[in-house]
Image (cartoon, rainbow, N blue to C red; front, top):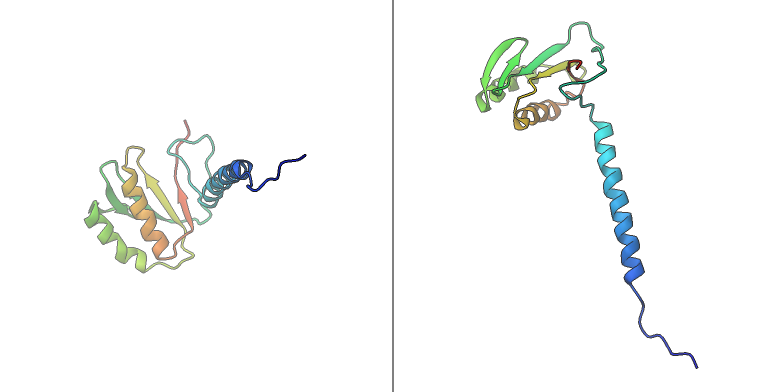
Length: 130
């Protein structure tokens, strides 16, 4: 005689869900990296900007922000001074971002955040060859 089953074994279901979760998280990471055109400070290959005279924004190792080689200040005052310059730009404007390898990551993110907030997404990040 066969014993009647009154419970469902959920352990295989949990195993499958954990594998699917790992696949989704891995894929989501690659999708984000593929969407952002990020270049590391040192790269074997470099791209040239499409525009002949793109606007240049630079961030020094101490967090000093420059717009077209003009110093705007360090930290929050520099970011505040950058805002009016960005407000005057068209969304199709090509921008080159030059960031020192020792720059705090928060300073880099703050500038990119301001660019994205104004719809300025044609961004190239300069690197150097090793």
